[in-house]
Image (tube, rainbow, N blue to C red; front, top):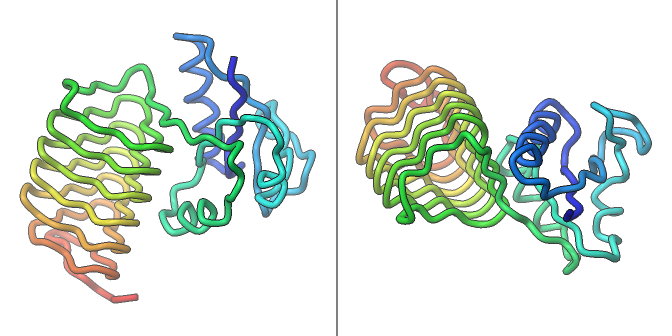
Amino acid sequence: MEKIAIIGAGGFGREVKCLIDDLNKADNTYEIIGFFDDNIEKGKLINDYKVVGNIEDLNKIDYKLNVVFGLGEPNLKKKIYNKLGNNNLKFPSLIHPSVIKSDDSVEIGNGCVICANVIITCNIKIKDFVTLNLCCTVGHDTIVESYSSFMPSVNISGEVVIEESVYVGTGAKIINQLTIGNNTIVGAGAVVSKSLPEKCTAVGIPAKPIKFH
């Protein structure tokens, strides 16, 4: 078995732990050593596993270790990854056994977390450290850039371009042939019918920017 650790011991970190458990039921691959978290005391027990250190401790690991992000916030994932300079760390993509991936035309980068009941069709490129939470759907010819995160039941139609570090809230829908600019936030339940610029927060039906950041 390969050792694996989870960055982030909050709610989504615990869900990632459950994803690893489900992977191990199908193929006994990973031994979970615990969580790494800057904001929770070392030694605290969370869902049967300890917080074994913080990000500084993770940079000191002197053996080969798989690491997965149990975090949903795109820029936090990016910030922490940029702090990690330890060549002993590997970032596998974890894909739940129930995920439907239509064929080999789907490309998935490193460090992604793809949760239960996600459907990914064909000719799709998903870059590094993308999170697709429960029951998301991704349509044909879509490109998803690194660090972007999609909360449960997001529907992405075909030929959509999602730029880097986009966050899409629960149940939002993105119509086909649109672009979502980098660092943009799409609110829960929004319906995106026109492309969105970068660095905005968009909400509503249809989704419209309400502020820029």
